[in-house]
Image (cartoon, rainbow, N blue to C red; front, side, top):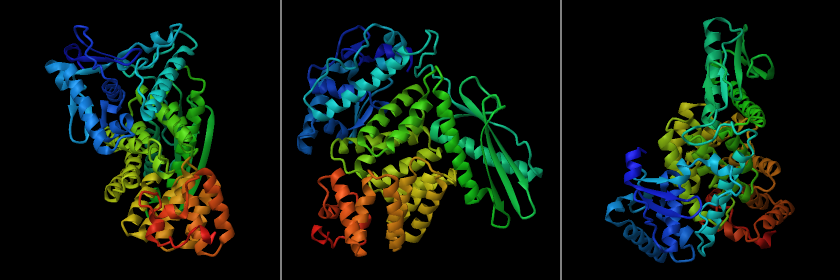
Length: 545
């Protein structure tokens, strides 16, 4: 935002008391508490934009949709009156969303010297004078205040005053991976293969975590990567080595031998899995390095967030979302927005009613913004494809995005698995099952590995492979006992095969996690059990247990 635009527009203060001031210092904030809360929701939203449905859920969740829409219109009118003709264009609306005009509005949290605030004896509170009697808004503002406080505390705990200050306009030193030339490679084809695999690993780390790819070591935490290839009589051996930043200490090494004659060596599933395993190991190594780093790292926050997300607990998902928002504040990477959008699908999968509608609306906004920022990032495309296909059941959109994901990176496990899922729901059951299983094999023990086992179970069921469906779903349940979707599928699957005791045992486990669950609920179209309904596994009731 240019200085002239800032001076000619409005400045919204969310640190401390909520204020909306013009260049003359006059406070133009509306008097109504809901109108002020609405502006606060916009000021702290990605790109300062939220859907009308999300705003209604936050501010008028107890009202019918028509009443909520009317109340929203009234609040928008109140804001326009408060802004007056001169600043009326600072608020932008259309049929679906409401936004602040970012060329005319600045928010203090974006430009404030947070290090100075953190050095005070008392930390400021975000939106300290905004309180309304709406549970959904209270939950949101509590999370925003906690995230802001964590940012300040992290700065306060820095060991010296000279430690770099984390701000959007002054990003922290990023984690990096330096791609080394091979120490040994047979001929030009060996050199090409080594560089190709090394490039895939580096790009995977960049796509998933925002890690920098470089050809020279840096001062911030990082590591070096070398890929060697050796052509044998009937095969090619590929060895991947991760080295410390100085290049003298070996951190990890692994290799594969790929038979010749089965197509292009670089497309071998075993070699693709090796690349993905290296990405996972490198991520863990970089995370450990950042434990002792004085500079706040967006990578560290995002890495921890994704691990929390897959602990299958909505509180952990919410905490992960806060960490990802902090990561984006430090380093505005599209992949952090994509992970935030994906995190909201847990509200659907776990069938959590609280905040669900608002979370899903936010997911679409975050997904759209992530695609705008990085339309060629394979991880972003994969995560967003799942948001559209699972949360909104827009299978054709999800299919197209997942196809793009593996077009940019054929070994992207989520892209391949999610493409398989959408193909299954579009009627191509055998192709879907095959692709989902390929994604599972490529995932290399990633945090989401158990979820891909479950997706293999779902696509196996749709393809008519019921024994494999039971096996894959059982594995997912063992790997993540608190993950509800496998249990919902196992109960009717066990009943179908006459295993009543197993069905009853899983049913009781699920009821402890989800007391409202019943076999009747599987028939509801809003319930996440589409494959069960499509296969006609709904002839059972609690009397059969």
